[in-house]
Length: 382
Ligand code: HEM
Image (cartoon, rainbow, N blue to C red; front, side, top):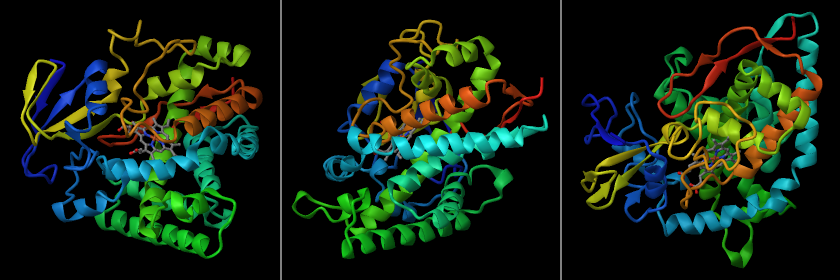
């Protein structure tokens, strides 16, 4: 049943139209992603909600985020923000991020000196993605921990362990939003040689309003932090559970490794769309208005596309995984930045902490759409 109906208990999702079609095959996930005229990101937004009570009145705010827009609004915003993510723009961060990666791993080396264990997530995986976004939008060092707290609060309130209320989530978004809007206003007043200036004060070629910039930064913080952090953590876990792959990585550093780490981790489990008309998919008739869940995690293990999908193989090539999306207009804007971060951090770990070992199983985040890890204990002790 590659496309099948999943009923939800009434009221659990907060939507009247509970339930959605689960789309699990690689080809079908691609088809839905590349046909925004048939499958809207805007109608019910792109995130499947299982256990939060987001109400219709908040949906208008959610729609200000490009992830939840349809063409032509989406096309306009995407064309503007793409300026900040050209290969040249991303490459210009390489030297700064390489230094950061070395420093992060160096600090972890100090932690592991007495042979004790340390948490890989909080000491290594969280840092580089956070620094990368801060670097990208020019956030001063002293404000970086605030950004981290805000993005964490916004993304994690599905998990009861964090005991984060919906109000706290909204509060964090509001504070973050106003921080980013101030940043945009400052650059309009006083342009600089940075991406913020490129996006908000570009003159004739179109630019974002202060609010649009604010919502874009919020999206970056969630989309860029949580995802890359979890790719790095799952990647480390996969390497340490497959020592022959770690050995191979240390020896050869294959350029294909980062893509396999993302396929294996699939940090974004699912996003959703809503059918704009009756449509046939995977042998099912999907009525207009029904929600459709795209399960990247399943598509990335589709045996029609991947040989031996359940083996972790850092030399896998080609590797047409859908971890960054199914190739349509919303395809991950930060893909090349994410791949660069993954390469930089594992290179640094392979050089400075080659003998790392697992000291426990990953403690997972409870979330419907993020394949998250809260803690992964590692050690250098034999
Ligand atoms: C969109 C995954 C890193 C920014 C997406 C989508 C996925 C995804 C699945 C939706 C694609 C679709 O609907 O077709 C990931 C993964 C990452 C990662 C797995 C890390 C391993 C990043 C980074 C940034 C970023 C580092 C930026 C700093 C975005 C943005 C969008 C997006 C802005 C929305 C694009 C749009 O709506 O047009 N990402 N992402 N992502 N990602 Fe990423």
